[in-house]
Amino acid sequence: MILVLDFGGQYAQLIARRVRECRVFSELVPYDTPIEEIKRKDPEGIILSGGPSSVYEEGAPRVDPALFELGVPILGICYGMQLMALEMGGKVGAVQIREYGPSEIEVRDHRVLFADTPERQRVWMSHGDAVLSAPEGFEVTAGTSSTPVVAFEETSKGRYGVQFHPEVRHTEYGMEILKNFLFEACECRAEWTPVNIITEATERIREQVGDARVIAALSGGVDSATAAMLVYRAIGDNLTCVFVDHGLLRENEAEQVMEAFTENYEIPLIHVDATRRFLDRLAGVTDPEKKRKIVGEEFIRTFEEEARRIEDARFLVQGTLYSDVIESGTRDAARIKSHHNVGGLPEVMDLELVEPLRNLFKDEVRVIAEELGMPERLVWRQPFPGPGLAIRIIGEVTAERLEILRRADAVLQDEIRAAGYYRKLWQSFAVLPAVQSVGVMGDARTYAYPIVIRAVTSDDAMTADWARLPYDLLERISNRIINEVPGVNRVALDITSKPPGTIEWE
Image (cartoon, rainbow, N blue to C red):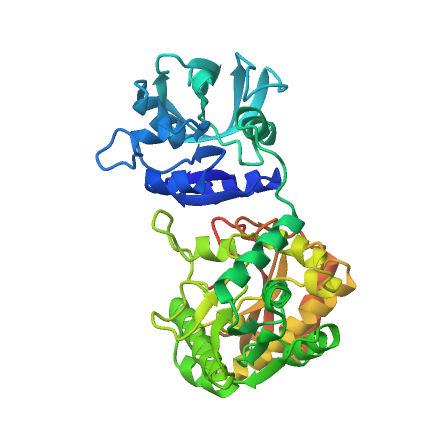
Protein backbone atom coordinates (compact mmCIF):
# COMPACT_ATOMS: atom_id res chain seq x y z
CA MET A 1 0.00 0.00 0.00
CA ILE A 2 1.15 3.49 -0.91
CA LEU A 3 0.02 6.55 1.02
CA VAL A 4 -0.45 9.78 -0.95
CA LEU A 5 -0.30 12.85 1.30
CA ASP A 6 -2.61 15.52 -0.11
CA PHE A 7 -1.37 19.13 -0.03
CA GLY A 8 -4.42 20.39 -1.94
CA GLY A 9 -2.99 19.93 -5.43
CA GLN A 10 -5.31 19.53 -8.40
CA TYR A 11 -3.64 16.25 -9.35
CA ALA A 12 -3.50 14.63 -5.89
CA GLN A 13 -6.31 12.14 -6.57
CA LEU A 14 -4.74 11.39 -9.94
CA ILE A 15 -1.53 10.22 -8.24
CA ALA A 16 -3.52 7.71 -6.19
CA ARG A 17 -5.28 6.55 -9.34
CA ARG A 18 -2.06 6.05 -11.31
CA VAL A 19 -0.62 3.95 -8.48
CA ARG A 20 -3.71 1.75 -8.60
CA GLU A 21 -3.29 1.34 -12.34
CA CYS A 22 0.00 -0.35 -11.45
CA ARG A 23 -2.06 -2.82 -9.35
CA VAL A 24 -0.77 -1.39 -6.10
CA PHE A 25 -3.35 -0.12 -3.60
CA SER A 26 -3.09 3.58 -2.72
CA GLU A 27 -4.90 5.83 -0.31
CA LEU A 28 -5.18 9.63 -0.32
CA VAL A 29 -4.88 11.17 3.17
CA PRO A 30 -4.43 14.74 4.51
CA TYR A 31 -0.87 16.03 4.61
CA ASP A 32 -0.98 16.41 8.40
CA THR A 33 -2.16 12.89 9.15
CA PRO A 34 -0.52 12.03 12.52
CA ILE A 35 2.64 9.97 12.34
CA GLU A 36 1.16 7.28 14.58
CA GLU A 37 -1.76 6.83 12.18
CA ILE A 38 0.63 6.60 9.24
CA LYS A 39 2.60 3.92 11.11
CA ARG A 40 -0.60 1.95 11.73
CA LYS A 41 -1.35 1.96 8.01
CA ASP A 42 2.11 0.47 7.45
CA PRO A 43 2.71 1.78 3.91
CA GLU A 44 5.44 0.45 1.62
CA GLY A 45 6.00 4.00 0.39
CA ILE A 46 4.74 7.58 0.68
CA ILE A 47 4.11 10.16 -2.05
CA LEU A 48 3.88 13.87 -1.27
CA SER A 49 1.51 15.58 -3.71
CA GLY A 50 1.71 18.98 -5.32
CA GLY A 51 -0.13 21.98 -3.89
CA PRO A 52 -0.95 25.65 -4.53
CA SER A 53 1.17 27.10 -1.70
CA SER A 54 4.77 28.29 -1.57
CA VAL A 55 6.78 26.32 0.97
CA TYR A 56 8.47 29.41 2.35
CA GLU A 57 5.31 31.49 2.90
CA GLU A 58 3.77 31.84 6.34
CA GLY A 59 1.17 29.17 7.08
CA ALA A 60 2.24 26.90 4.22
CA PRO A 61 1.42 23.20 4.77
CA ARG A 62 4.25 21.32 6.44
CA VAL A 63 4.74 17.76 7.67
CA ASP A 64 6.05 16.29 10.89
CA PRO A 65 9.82 15.91 10.30
CA ALA A 66 9.49 12.42 11.77
CA LEU A 67 7.86 11.44 8.46
CA PHE A 68 11.28 11.37 6.82
CA GLU A 69 12.60 9.04 9.52
CA LEU A 70 10.01 6.29 9.09
CA GLY A 71 12.36 4.20 7.01
CA VAL A 72 10.03 3.93 3.99
CA PRO A 73 10.78 5.43 0.54
CA ILE A 74 9.27 8.87 -0.08
CA LEU A 75 8.61 10.54 -3.44
CA GLY A 76 7.93 14.28 -3.49
CA ILE A 77 6.08 15.70 -6.50
CA CYS A 78 6.21 19.46 -7.24
CA TYR A 79 5.31 21.07 -3.87
CA GLY A 80 6.16 17.73 -2.24
CA MET A 81 9.68 17.87 -3.69
CA GLN A 82 10.15 21.47 -2.57
CA LEU A 83 8.96 20.62 0.94
CA MET A 84 11.35 17.67 1.14
CA ALA A 85 14.23 19.86 -0.03
CA LEU A 86 13.42 22.53 2.57
CA GLU A 87 13.13 19.99 5.41
CA MET A 88 16.41 18.34 4.42
CA GLY A 89 18.37 21.61 4.28
CA GLY A 90 18.11 22.55 0.61
CA LYS A 91 17.09 25.91 -0.82
CA VAL A 92 13.73 26.72 -2.43
CA GLY A 93 12.66 29.95 -4.09
CA ALA A 94 10.75 31.63 -6.90
CA VAL A 95 12.07 31.08 -10.41
CA GLN A 96 12.51 33.86 -12.95
CA ILE A 97 10.66 31.97 -15.64
CA ARG A 98 7.62 30.06 -14.41
CA GLU A 99 6.79 26.78 -16.10
CA TYR A 100 3.19 25.84 -16.82
CA GLY A 101 2.55 23.14 -19.38
CA PRO A 102 4.86 20.96 -21.47
CA SER A 103 8.61 21.17 -20.99
CA GLU A 104 11.64 19.11 -22.00
CA ILE A 105 14.00 17.85 -19.31
CA GLU A 106 17.51 16.46 -19.58
CA VAL A 107 18.15 13.36 -17.48
CA ARG A 108 21.64 13.38 -15.99
CA ASP A 109 21.48 10.20 -13.92
CA HIS A 110 19.34 7.12 -14.58
CA ARG A 111 19.87 5.46 -11.19
CA VAL A 112 16.30 4.71 -9.93
CA LEU A 113 13.44 6.97 -11.06
CA PHE A 114 14.73 7.40 -14.61
CA ALA A 115 15.95 3.84 -15.14
CA ASP A 116 15.27 2.66 -18.71
CA THR A 117 13.99 6.07 -19.86
CA PRO A 118 15.57 8.43 -22.47
CA GLU A 119 18.04 11.20 -21.74
CA ARG A 120 15.56 13.80 -23.05
CA GLN A 121 11.86 13.54 -22.38
CA ARG A 122 8.72 15.68 -22.35
CA VAL A 123 7.11 16.36 -18.97
CA TRP A 124 4.22 18.43 -17.59
CA MET A 125 5.22 21.34 -15.37
CA SER A 126 3.02 23.56 -13.18
CA HIS A 127 5.11 25.66 -10.80
CA GLY A 128 6.34 29.13 -9.91
CA ASP A 129 8.81 27.96 -7.24
CA ALA A 130 11.58 25.40 -7.56
CA VAL A 131 14.45 23.78 -5.69
CA LEU A 132 17.40 26.14 -6.17
CA SER A 133 19.94 23.84 -4.52
CA ALA A 134 19.56 20.22 -3.48
CA PRO A 135 20.11 19.16 0.14
CA GLU A 136 23.42 17.60 1.11
CA GLY A 137 23.59 13.94 0.13
CA PHE A 138 21.05 14.32 -2.73
CA GLU A 139 22.13 13.81 -6.34
CA VAL A 140 20.52 16.02 -8.98
CA THR A 141 19.24 13.62 -11.63
CA ALA A 142 17.47 15.93 -14.11
CA GLY A 143 17.12 19.60 -15.04
CA THR A 144 16.00 22.11 -17.65
CA SER A 145 17.57 25.29 -18.97
CA SER A 146 15.52 27.40 -16.54
CA THR A 147 15.25 24.93 -13.63
CA PRO A 148 18.57 23.19 -12.90
CA VAL A 149 17.09 20.93 -10.18
CA VAL A 150 14.11 19.17 -11.76
CA ALA A 151 14.71 15.87 -9.98
CA PHE A 152 16.90 14.55 -7.19
CA GLU A 153 17.52 11.29 -5.33
CA GLU A 154 19.05 10.18 -2.08
CA THR A 155 18.84 6.47 -2.78
CA SER A 156 20.56 5.33 0.42
CA LYS A 157 17.67 6.72 2.46
CA GLY A 158 14.93 6.23 -0.12
CA ARG A 159 14.19 9.90 -0.77
CA TYR A 160 13.20 11.05 -4.25
CA GLY A 161 11.76 14.20 -5.78
CA VAL A 162 10.53 15.48 -9.16
CA GLN A 163 9.41 19.02 -9.97
CA PHE A 164 7.13 17.87 -12.80
CA HIS A 165 3.96 15.76 -12.64
CA PRO A 166 4.55 12.10 -13.61
CA GLU A 167 0.88 11.31 -12.90
CA VAL A 168 -0.31 13.47 -15.83
CA ARG A 169 -0.60 11.77 -19.22
CA HIS A 170 1.32 14.63 -20.86
CA THR A 171 4.49 13.41 -19.11
CA GLU A 172 5.85 10.94 -21.65
CA TYR A 173 7.46 8.49 -19.24
CA GLY A 174 5.40 9.33 -16.17
CA MET A 175 4.12 5.80 -15.62
CA GLU A 176 7.63 4.37 -16.01
CA ILE A 177 8.88 6.82 -13.37
CA LEU A 178 6.06 5.89 -10.98
CA LYS A 179 6.66 2.18 -11.59
CA ASN A 180 10.36 2.62 -10.86
CA PHE A 181 9.43 4.20 -7.52
CA LEU A 182 6.83 1.54 -6.71
CA PHE A 183 8.67 -1.59 -7.78
CA GLU A 184 12.35 -0.62 -7.44
CA ALA A 185 12.44 1.88 -4.58
CA CYS A 186 9.49 0.52 -2.55
CA GLU A 187 9.72 -3.13 -3.73
CA CYS A 188 5.92 -3.31 -4.04
CA ARG A 189 4.18 -6.25 -5.66
CA ALA A 190 1.39 -5.82 -8.22
CA GLU A 191 -1.17 -7.81 -6.26
CA TRP A 192 -4.15 -5.47 -6.00
CA THR A 193 -6.57 -7.35 -8.26
CA PRO A 194 -10.39 -7.50 -8.53
CA VAL A 195 -10.42 -10.87 -6.75
CA ASN A 196 -8.47 -9.41 -3.82
CA ILE A 197 -10.75 -6.37 -3.70
CA ILE A 198 -13.87 -8.57 -3.60
CA THR A 199 -12.44 -10.79 -0.86
CA GLU A 200 -11.33 -7.86 1.30
CA ALA A 201 -14.61 -5.97 0.80
CA THR A 202 -16.63 -9.04 1.76
CA GLU A 203 -14.65 -9.48 4.97
CA ARG A 204 -15.04 -5.80 5.92
CA ILE A 205 -18.81 -5.92 5.33
CA ARG A 206 -19.23 -8.99 7.56
CA GLU A 207 -17.17 -7.36 10.28
CA GLN A 208 -19.21 -4.14 10.14
CA VAL A 209 -22.70 -5.60 9.77
CA GLY A 210 -22.63 -8.83 11.75
CA ASP A 211 -26.08 -10.48 11.89
CA ALA A 212 -28.08 -7.28 11.40
CA ARG A 213 -30.53 -6.70 8.58
CA VAL A 214 -29.37 -4.36 5.82
CA ILE A 215 -31.12 -2.35 3.09
CA ALA A 216 -29.35 -1.33 -0.10
CA ALA A 217 -30.11 1.84 -2.04
CA LEU A 218 -30.54 0.58 -5.60
CA SER A 219 -30.57 3.09 -8.45
CA GLY A 220 -30.13 0.81 -11.46
CA GLY A 221 -26.55 1.90 -12.09
CA VAL A 222 -23.42 -0.21 -11.86
CA ASP A 223 -22.23 1.42 -8.61
CA SER A 224 -25.27 0.66 -6.47
CA ALA A 225 -25.74 -2.78 -8.05
CA THR A 226 -22.09 -3.73 -7.44
CA ALA A 227 -22.28 -2.51 -3.83
CA ALA A 228 -25.46 -4.53 -3.32
CA MET A 229 -23.90 -7.66 -4.83
CA LEU A 230 -20.85 -7.39 -2.58
CA VAL A 231 -23.07 -7.08 0.48
CA TYR A 232 -25.27 -9.98 -0.68
CA ARG A 233 -22.13 -12.05 -1.12
CA ALA A 234 -21.20 -11.21 2.48
CA ILE A 235 -24.53 -11.56 4.34
CA GLY A 236 -26.93 -13.32 1.96
CA ASP A 237 -30.65 -13.11 2.79
CA ASN A 238 -30.14 -10.43 5.44
CA LEU A 239 -30.09 -7.92 2.57
CA THR A 240 -33.13 -6.20 1.05
CA CYS A 241 -32.75 -3.79 -1.88
CA VAL A 242 -34.87 -0.64 -2.06
CA PHE A 243 -35.41 1.22 -5.32
CA VAL A 244 -36.76 4.74 -4.79
CA ASP A 245 -38.35 6.36 -7.83
CA HIS A 246 -37.97 10.06 -7.08
CA GLY A 247 -39.68 11.15 -10.29
CA LEU A 248 -36.41 12.52 -11.67
CA LEU A 249 -35.51 9.50 -13.80
CA ARG A 250 -35.25 9.21 -17.56
CA GLU A 251 -37.99 7.84 -19.81
CA ASN A 252 -39.21 4.37 -18.70
CA GLU A 253 -36.20 4.04 -16.41
CA ALA A 254 -38.08 2.86 -13.30
CA GLU A 255 -39.65 -0.03 -15.22
CA GLN A 256 -36.29 -0.95 -16.79
CA VAL A 257 -34.51 -1.00 -13.41
CA MET A 258 -37.12 -3.26 -11.81
CA GLU A 259 -37.17 -5.60 -14.79
CA ALA A 260 -33.38 -5.85 -15.09
CA PHE A 261 -32.85 -6.51 -11.40
CA THR A 262 -35.62 -9.07 -10.89
CA GLU A 263 -34.54 -10.96 -14.03
CA ASN A 264 -30.89 -11.27 -12.96
CA TYR A 265 -30.95 -11.48 -9.16
CA GLU A 266 -32.92 -13.21 -6.41
CA ILE A 267 -32.37 -10.48 -3.83
CA PRO A 268 -35.64 -9.09 -2.37
CA LEU A 269 -36.46 -5.75 -4.00
CA ILE A 270 -38.90 -3.09 -2.79
CA HIS A 271 -40.12 -0.40 -5.22
CA VAL A 272 -41.06 2.92 -3.63
CA ASP A 273 -42.80 5.60 -5.72
CA ALA A 274 -41.77 8.85 -3.99
CA THR A 275 -42.31 11.18 -6.94
CA ARG A 276 -44.71 13.52 -5.20
CA ARG A 277 -42.61 14.09 -2.06
CA PHE A 278 -39.45 14.88 -4.06
CA LEU A 279 -41.15 17.28 -6.47
CA ASP A 280 -42.93 19.03 -3.60
CA ARG A 281 -39.59 19.59 -1.82
CA LEU A 282 -37.94 20.87 -5.02
CA ALA A 283 -40.73 23.33 -5.88
CA GLY A 284 -39.34 26.84 -6.31
CA VAL A 285 -35.71 25.74 -5.75
CA THR A 286 -33.15 26.91 -8.32
CA ASP A 287 -29.82 26.72 -6.45
CA PRO A 288 -28.00 23.51 -7.54
CA GLU A 289 -26.44 22.86 -4.10
CA LYS A 290 -29.88 23.12 -2.48
CA LYS A 291 -31.28 20.70 -5.05
CA ARG A 292 -28.56 18.16 -4.27
CA LYS A 293 -29.03 18.46 -0.51
CA ILE A 294 -32.82 18.19 -0.76
CA VAL A 295 -32.54 15.04 -2.88
CA GLY A 296 -29.90 13.59 -0.55
CA GLU A 297 -32.02 14.19 2.53
CA GLU A 298 -35.26 12.89 1.00
CA PHE A 299 -33.49 9.72 -0.12
CA ILE A 300 -32.29 9.08 3.43
CA ARG A 301 -35.69 9.80 4.99
CA THR A 302 -37.37 7.45 2.51
CA PHE A 303 -34.85 4.69 3.24
CA GLU A 304 -35.30 5.22 6.98
CA GLU A 305 -39.06 4.75 6.60
CA GLU A 306 -38.54 1.52 4.67
CA ALA A 307 -35.97 0.28 7.19
CA ARG A 308 -38.50 0.61 10.01
CA ARG A 309 -40.68 -1.91 8.19
CA ILE A 310 -37.85 -4.46 8.25
CA GLU A 311 -36.97 -5.90 11.65
CA ASP A 312 -33.50 -4.93 12.90
CA ALA A 313 -32.53 -3.08 9.69
CA ARG A 314 -29.82 -0.73 10.92
CA PHE A 315 -27.54 -0.36 7.89
CA LEU A 316 -27.86 1.34 4.50
CA VAL A 317 -25.69 0.30 1.53
CA GLN A 318 -24.65 3.05 -0.89
CA GLY A 319 -22.62 2.89 -4.11
CA THR A 320 -20.45 5.87 -3.12
CA LEU A 321 -17.24 6.16 -5.17
CA TYR A 322 -13.90 7.79 -4.46
CA SER A 323 -14.61 10.49 -7.08
CA ASP A 324 -17.86 11.37 -5.23
CA VAL A 325 -15.91 11.87 -2.01
CA ILE A 326 -13.23 14.00 -3.68
CA GLU A 327 -15.65 16.26 -5.60
CA SER A 328 -17.81 16.78 -2.52
CA GLY A 329 -14.78 18.40 -0.92
CA THR A 330 -12.10 17.38 1.52
CA ARG A 331 -10.38 19.67 3.99
CA ASP A 332 -7.51 20.39 1.56
CA ALA A 333 -9.43 20.31 -1.73
CA ALA A 334 -12.21 22.64 -2.77
CA ARG A 335 -15.78 21.37 -3.01
CA ILE A 336 -16.80 21.16 -6.66
CA LYS A 337 -20.33 19.96 -5.93
CA SER A 338 -22.05 18.08 -3.13
CA HIS A 339 -22.82 14.56 -4.29
CA HIS A 340 -26.20 13.54 -2.88
CA ASN A 341 -24.65 10.47 -1.24
CA VAL A 342 -21.75 12.38 0.39
CA GLY A 343 -22.01 16.14 0.90
CA GLY A 344 -25.79 16.04 0.38
CA LEU A 345 -26.44 13.72 3.32
CA PRO A 346 -28.32 15.09 6.37
CA GLU A 347 -26.31 15.58 9.55
CA VAL A 348 -28.56 13.25 11.60
CA MET A 349 -29.37 9.78 10.27
CA ASP A 350 -30.94 6.68 11.81
CA LEU A 351 -29.02 4.32 9.55
CA GLU A 352 -25.30 3.51 9.51
CA LEU A 353 -23.75 3.60 6.05
CA VAL A 354 -22.09 0.63 4.37
CA GLU A 355 -20.00 1.85 1.43
CA PRO A 356 -17.86 -0.99 0.01
CA LEU A 357 -16.85 1.04 -3.08
CA ARG A 358 -15.87 4.26 -1.29
CA ASN A 359 -12.16 3.86 -2.14
CA LEU A 360 -12.70 2.91 -5.80
CA PHE A 361 -12.99 4.78 -9.10
CA LYS A 362 -15.70 3.99 -11.65
CA ASP A 363 -13.52 1.91 -13.97
CA GLU A 364 -12.34 -0.17 -10.99
CA VAL A 365 -15.97 -0.80 -10.04
CA ARG A 366 -16.71 -1.98 -13.57
CA VAL A 367 -13.87 -4.51 -13.39
CA ILE A 368 -15.30 -5.86 -10.13
CA ALA A 369 -18.82 -5.94 -11.61
CA GLU A 370 -17.55 -8.06 -14.50
CA GLU A 371 -15.75 -10.35 -12.02
CA LEU A 372 -19.07 -10.75 -10.16
CA GLY A 373 -20.75 -11.79 -13.42
CA MET A 374 -23.06 -8.82 -13.87
CA PRO A 375 -24.81 -8.32 -17.25
CA GLU A 376 -22.80 -6.29 -19.77
CA ARG A 377 -25.61 -3.74 -20.27
CA LEU A 378 -25.55 -2.96 -16.55
CA VAL A 379 -21.75 -2.92 -16.25
CA TRP A 380 -21.36 -0.41 -19.08
CA ARG A 381 -24.41 1.75 -18.38
CA GLN A 382 -23.38 5.40 -18.58
CA PRO A 383 -23.27 7.16 -15.21
CA PHE A 384 -26.51 8.83 -14.12
CA PRO A 385 -26.47 11.25 -11.17
CA GLY A 386 -28.43 10.46 -8.01
CA PRO A 387 -30.36 13.76 -8.19
CA GLY A 388 -31.28 12.73 -11.73
CA LEU A 389 -32.85 15.24 -14.07
CA ALA A 390 -33.14 17.78 -11.24
CA ILE A 391 -29.57 18.89 -11.95
CA ARG A 392 -30.02 18.76 -15.72
CA ILE A 393 -32.81 21.32 -15.55
CA ILE A 394 -31.02 24.60 -14.96
CA GLY A 395 -33.61 26.40 -12.87
CA GLU A 396 -36.75 25.27 -11.10
CA VAL A 397 -37.79 21.64 -11.58
CA THR A 398 -41.36 21.34 -12.83
CA ALA A 399 -43.41 18.46 -14.23
CA GLU A 400 -43.55 20.18 -17.64
CA ARG A 401 -39.78 20.65 -17.85
CA LEU A 402 -39.15 17.08 -16.69
CA GLU A 403 -41.36 15.72 -19.47
CA ILE A 404 -39.61 17.86 -22.12
CA LEU A 405 -36.17 16.83 -20.93
CA ARG A 406 -37.12 13.14 -20.71
CA ARG A 407 -38.32 13.08 -24.31
CA ALA A 408 -35.30 15.01 -25.60
CA ASP A 409 -32.89 12.74 -23.72
CA ALA A 410 -34.64 9.64 -25.06
CA VAL A 411 -34.07 10.86 -28.63
CA LEU A 412 -30.42 11.58 -27.87
CA GLN A 413 -29.82 8.14 -26.33
CA ASP A 414 -31.59 6.42 -29.22
CA GLU A 415 -29.38 8.12 -31.81
CA ILE A 416 -26.16 7.65 -29.79
CA ARG A 417 -26.80 3.91 -29.49
CA ALA A 418 -27.83 3.57 -33.14
CA ALA A 419 -24.60 5.27 -34.25
CA GLY A 420 -22.48 2.91 -32.11
CA TYR A 421 -21.22 5.66 -29.79
CA TYR A 422 -22.74 4.59 -26.48
CA ARG A 423 -19.72 2.55 -25.28
CA LYS A 424 -17.27 5.10 -26.72
CA LEU A 425 -18.59 7.87 -24.49
CA TRP A 426 -18.30 8.31 -20.74
CA GLN A 427 -21.62 10.15 -20.70
CA SER A 428 -24.10 11.63 -23.13
CA PHE A 429 -27.21 13.47 -22.03
CA ALA A 430 -29.52 16.43 -22.62
CA VAL A 431 -29.68 19.59 -20.52
CA LEU A 432 -32.63 21.97 -20.29
CA PRO A 433 -31.78 25.57 -19.29
CA ALA A 434 -34.90 27.27 -17.93
CA VAL A 435 -34.80 30.07 -20.50
CA GLN A 436 -36.72 30.50 -23.72
CA SER A 437 -35.78 31.88 -27.12
CA VAL A 438 -37.57 32.94 -30.29
CA GLY A 439 -37.85 30.56 -33.21
CA VAL A 440 -39.84 30.00 -36.40
CA MET A 441 -41.76 26.77 -36.97
CA GLY A 442 -44.41 26.35 -39.64
CA ASP A 443 -44.12 30.03 -40.62
CA ALA A 444 -45.15 30.98 -37.09
CA ARG A 445 -43.20 32.53 -34.23
CA THR A 446 -42.27 30.23 -31.35
CA TYR A 447 -40.98 31.01 -27.90
CA ALA A 448 -39.64 27.77 -26.46
CA TYR A 449 -36.84 26.04 -24.55
CA PRO A 450 -33.39 25.16 -25.87
CA ILE A 451 -31.87 21.72 -25.34
CA VAL A 452 -28.12 21.44 -24.84
CA ILE A 453 -26.35 18.23 -25.86
CA ARG A 454 -23.53 17.16 -23.54
CA ALA A 455 -21.26 14.27 -24.58
CA VAL A 456 -17.84 13.59 -23.05
CA THR A 457 -15.04 11.05 -23.04
CA SER A 458 -13.20 10.21 -19.81
CA ASP A 459 -11.45 7.47 -17.87
CA ASP A 460 -12.67 8.28 -14.37
CA ALA A 461 -14.82 11.46 -14.46
CA MET A 462 -12.11 13.45 -12.66
CA THR A 463 -11.16 14.98 -16.00
CA ALA A 464 -13.09 14.83 -19.28
CA ASP A 465 -12.98 16.05 -22.86
CA TRP A 466 -15.96 16.95 -25.03
CA ALA A 467 -16.70 14.27 -27.60
CA ARG A 468 -16.15 15.04 -31.28
CA LEU A 469 -19.43 13.58 -32.55
CA PRO A 470 -19.95 13.47 -36.35
CA TYR A 471 -21.87 16.37 -37.82
CA ASP A 472 -24.44 14.11 -39.47
CA LEU A 473 -25.18 12.47 -36.10
CA LEU A 474 -25.57 15.86 -34.44
CA GLU A 475 -27.86 16.95 -37.27
CA ARG A 476 -30.11 13.90 -36.80
CA ILE A 477 -30.28 14.48 -33.06
CA SER A 478 -31.13 18.15 -33.49
CA ASN A 479 -33.79 17.54 -36.15
CA ARG A 480 -35.48 14.79 -34.17
CA ILE A 481 -35.54 16.72 -30.89
CA ILE A 482 -37.01 19.85 -32.50
CA ASN A 483 -39.56 17.86 -34.53
CA GLU A 484 -40.54 15.31 -31.87
CA VAL A 485 -40.38 17.21 -28.59
CA PRO A 486 -43.03 19.92 -28.08
CA GLY A 487 -41.70 22.97 -26.27
CA VAL A 488 -38.22 22.91 -27.87
CA ASN A 489 -37.14 25.11 -30.78
CA ARG A 490 -33.35 25.14 -30.47
CA VAL A 491 -30.52 22.61 -29.90
CA ALA A 492 -26.99 23.56 -28.83
CA LEU A 493 -23.78 21.58 -28.27
CA ASP A 494 -21.59 21.97 -25.17
CA ILE A 495 -17.91 21.87 -26.21
CA THR A 496 -16.40 22.50 -22.77
CA SER A 497 -13.86 20.10 -21.26
CA LYS A 498 -13.39 19.34 -17.55
CA PRO A 499 -11.69 21.42 -16.27
CA PRO A 500 -12.70 24.23 -16.61
CA GLY A 501 -16.28 22.96 -16.73
CA THR A 502 -17.77 19.96 -14.96
CA ILE A 503 -19.47 17.07 -16.74
CA GLU A 504 -22.89 17.83 -15.29
CA TRP A 505 -24.12 21.41 -15.51
CA GLU A 506 -25.10 21.55 -11.83
